[in-house]
Amino acid sequence: MKNIAIFASGAGSNAQKIIDHLRNSTDGKVTLIVCNKPGAGVLQIAENEGIPSVLIDKEEFFRGDAYVKLLKEKNIDLIVLAGFLWKIPANLVQAFPDKIINIHPALLPKYGGKGMYGHFVHEAVIAAKETESGITIHFVNEKYDDGAPILQERCQITPDDTPETLAKKVQVLEHQWFPVIVERLLKK
Image 1 (cartoon, one colour):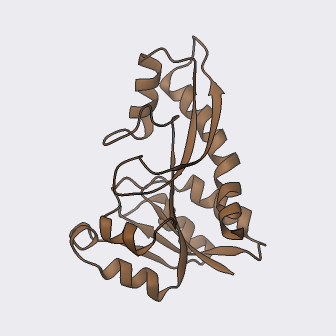
Image 2 (cartoon, rainbow, N blue to C red):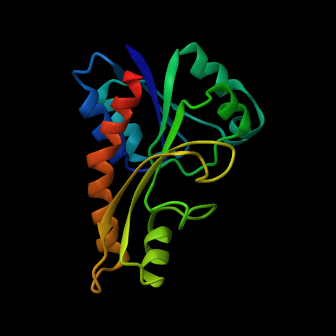
């Protein structure tokens, strides 16, 4: 049984979908929720599910190695970024090579990089008059949205789509595919 840490900054809908998907799995389970935002919904999910959580300190996250030690002590096998808005520091990437994955709400390499998250991505996609968008699940390296892709899934954009309607289409793909990919990685 492999241990998963989910890093999240917001409501935690992807975290909940992953927890639900793995509830009866023999491959792995979510054993830690890591959050950088007091009051984030994902912390309530952790409490409701009986999963330990940790609220991280920005200075320690970027300058120290206490969180690497914590993750090692908790025997974490896979780190899943599910709406986590901080860049992962090099020491953490190096401590967990090819064991950190992220989901991005666009078809990378387009609309990735610093500041490209959530509604900013959907606004940029609509402004560029793209005809499709989607999700990219990828490994994490030292650069924003640059790691090797694991899966891309697409959705069509209609002329009457707004950033809000596109966000809903993309979230459907996230909820459908992210738990499946997490489970596949656990089996490797």
